[in-house]
Length: 151
Image 1: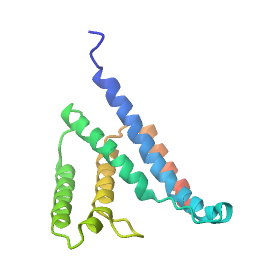
Image 2: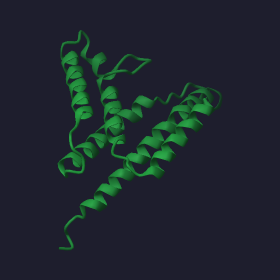
Image 3: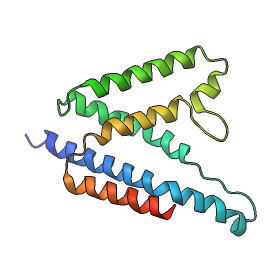
Image 4: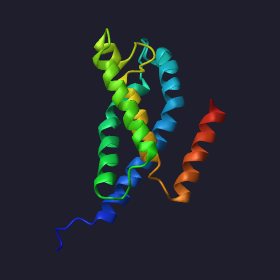
């Protein structure tokens, strides 16, 4: 029985990973501005770092966390889940019928509002609802306030 994976331990680890992802994304918004602004002076050329690159990287992680919670019965599907799934379905349908499929998947050059990024935002929303420890919620709200003041 030593080889059996403890479900509570895995869920705790996934909650921490989800919390770290949310805090990092909150912190990266102003950091990307400063990296892009000051890189011109220090590197002599424009070094660009965009938040969509991080969102593309975390999307599979967020999808795994969400469906792991659903399949281990830690979370039940409710109306919010169904509405988000419906939005993702409509996004996929509109991507299939798009005039420029590449643009529909990745987004335009400066806004990056494509299907991949929108799905990452949806998954972040769905997974942020899993955070039920008050201290983690307070840390997320405090970091939002600090970033809002800094901007």
